[in-house]
Length: 217
Image (cartoon, rainbow, N blue to C red; front, side, top):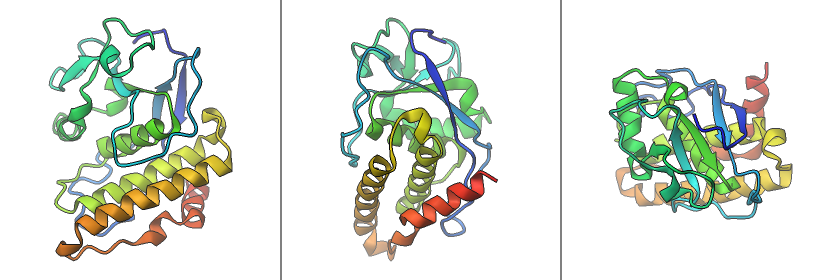
């Protein structure tokens, strides 16, 4: 593992299934526990970048060892996190999140044994945590909006659990939550012809905080 980044160990306790039965074909096949997260110490962590459906810049999952998970597509980390000190380190190809979700499950490879995350903004950290939830809960993507919603709630809960380590206040978390609601609602609008209806209550602040309180017990 590269040592250029001081790594935070973020708590990622598993959430209960919140979406309908059958959305996942292997929910919690691997219990999520922690995610190693790095950010460049000589650059400001961006708390203002809006969370949108677009892939955020400067977010990449770096392989812990050069020969880890050889079945996963990889590219140079420096291509996707430029100016952050990467030289020859390899990272999961950003276009291969779905491929990795399938392959990690097929090989029963715990994600934490293979990957750590670099993310330089709150938006990129949210999406990194969202993808971390995907890696631990395999879904066939037959009901995409619901699959993504479970991962949205997981990422928001994990942001709240780790607010002190990340360095964000409640106002920053709430702004992120509102932006995530907009992204989730748009997904359900795209799938409305399939009869999918957005349950916005799953992303209510009070409900997410209640989940976090149960995780802490």
